Image (cartoon, rainbow, N blue to C red; front, side, top):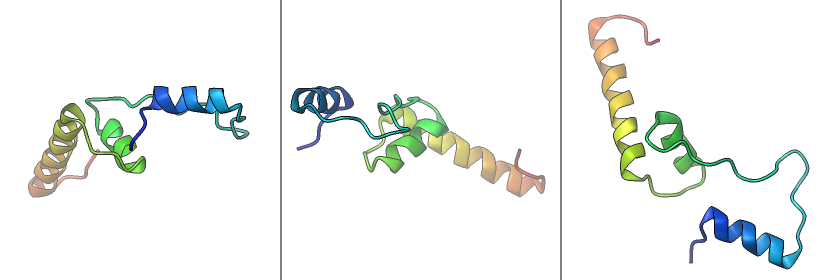
Length: 73
């Protein structure tokens, strides 16, 4: 069973647990961006379609730069 972020937050609130210092709630995923795909991977979640497409675009751009012989920016 996998909980969504909202369900996890509600469960923590219901149980009465305190959040650890320095880290409040999970930050929302920036869907449709390369950063969003990295957030999915960090959380060990499957990538949504917009994030998967953004990751493909990033990889395609990096490969194009490498083939052209330039530095990736």
